[in-house]
Image (tube, rainbow, N blue to C red; front, side):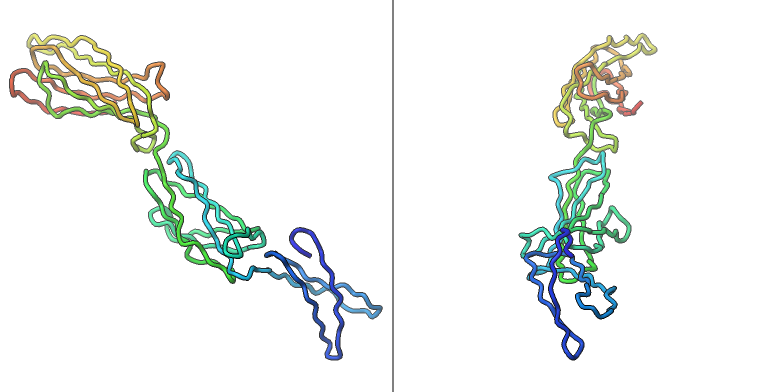
Length: 278
């Protein structure tokens, strides 16, 4: 009986030594069951059976199937498939257990069951970059395991923005503020192409400092990064708050964050820029 459901029968002549044999030819790898059927009148016990794997002339090769890239937002599914005859014929009769190692992802080994020539496993990474998975052992005869599978993880969907600005800025000089979009794991969301709105506001300080009028700038991000020039037209040192909001035309909803920067008056005057996320 073959795995496809087909059955082939051969008659076996039993010799004086109590033995007999039959020849079966198989065109492709298979998992078959040999059983007995009594065709004579003598009462014989025919309950014995045997299970056998029919392998190709060359060893079975186990190969990884991976996608071009995977997002860090979800586990990556990797498929393992068995092939015979030099890798040209899918071997759906293969059964075995693989031992896998992925340094930096799993502790120790992970086992994968391969049934019907196919098995699968998942790999999870929250960081952008590559992960290598190696087959270290397989409990099946006449089998060659693939060396490694290289998985490439890319940033996920943008969920928040952040900003960077120069450490010091002089009043009436433009400060270049860099705006970046990040995924849920803190990776730069390089797939985000959209826009956020930047608001510059500042309250009047002591000593007759003038308030900064609210200024709105649209910052367009390409590959997750954009920039805008911030100018503070006051004549005294001023604390300036830069706030980001998501306008209606943005591709995703981004969590607001802000930076506070101290603009200082006078040639050569300097003050540290404190950056905070709120």
